[in-house]
Amino acid sequence: MDTSLFLLKKILGGHGMKKSLVVLAIIVFTFSLCGTALAAAISNPFVDVPKGHWSYGAVKKLVDDGIVDGVDGKFYGDKTLSRYEMSVIVAKALAKEDKANAEEKALIEKLAAEYRNELESIGVRLNAMEAKTEKVQYYGYLGFRYNDVKVGSADTTVWAAHFDGNISFKVDDKTKIGYEFASHRDLTSGAAGSSSNYDYNGMQLYVNTTGIDKINLTAGRFNLNPAYDMVVSSNDYQGAPVRGAKIDFGGNVVGASLFAGKIDGTYGLASTTFNYGNYYMAEADYKVSRDTTVKAAYHYFKPEKGSYSTLSTNGDSVNFVELGFDTKLNKDFSFQAAADKSSTDGNNKGYFAQLMYKQSMFWAVPHSYDVFVAYHDTPANSTINGGLVSDFYGGVGYDFKGMAFGAHYTPVRMQQLTMFCYKGKDITSNADKTVYRAQYDFFF
Image (cartoon, rainbow, N blue to C red; front, side):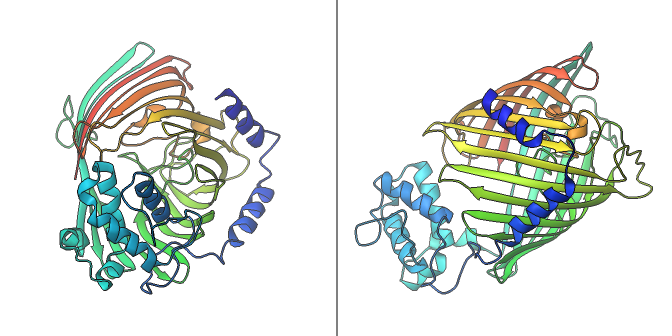
């Protein structure tokens, strides 16, 4: 872990941001990808499934587990298959679904949904899938959490409940409309109408389409989590949704995203207080191997006039560069590390690294679990609304330097227990900071 952090620090270290070089490099890198197609649903059954599409990994697991044996009795993981050929393999898996375990059944179900049209064209009936292919779908969770946060001599304990619901309206096979609403209740002391209790309708309201050639477009108000969430994260229940448009394009080895618009609910930047601003982002991802991916992102933020900004930087805007990687070390262990740097003065570099054992798969596998240990260093000047802030982990990683230990456990499918402890320093005050969290979530 120390070696990874050292390399990341060296990459983002140095004197100054060299903004123009960073922007130029990302633009050249991004636009070089335009000729590669996205892995999108295609109506022609003889069109190839793009190399690197998630289907290949899913089928390989089913082959390795002995559920299916591929096309003509063989499966070559490095050979490109057509959607028709892939549907033949999925049909074989459906025929042996009774021999599959919970994780394998979840993969078969996902594959059947992806290749539904091709399966029906070869006479495979999917009546069990009907409910999952309706025009309107609902998903979300209800979570109960206990938080104990101690900073210096101040100790705050909170019991809370949070509900998050999402509705997806299918326009056609390539376009959908998304809507999100949330309710949060402080079960300890939050009085009616207080800021700790709120209902948020329209947290997300967007349209997503793959109908534009080689482009995946999202427009409206929606969540955005570039690279490794170090600079911007919309996962926090009081997070920072963006308003604007994002395009995703590229292939299965190299991909890219561009965003232009505004960001809401920002916090961070110790010398400033502002809530709204113009925000632009460019991200590039490179899949080094089957198990390793590298991601880089450039962020530009400029607060709107009258947004209570007291921004004190080398101008009236702030730039961020973010870089990281994730890798699967072997069957059980995974590791990720990331770093970022802003153009502000002081406390402007953030670092994160995490080692995880196993994986809690609440969506498919009862009694699955994981255990993790992580290092956080997220000064206020290194983030807009990031630092791996999320609804599942809360804002405890913001302005924090130290270690985190935790675990997830799935007692039954679609339920998950989360427990963790943060131990370190509050960066701004230099006071000792300790956080304990216990959380139980019901998913639907």
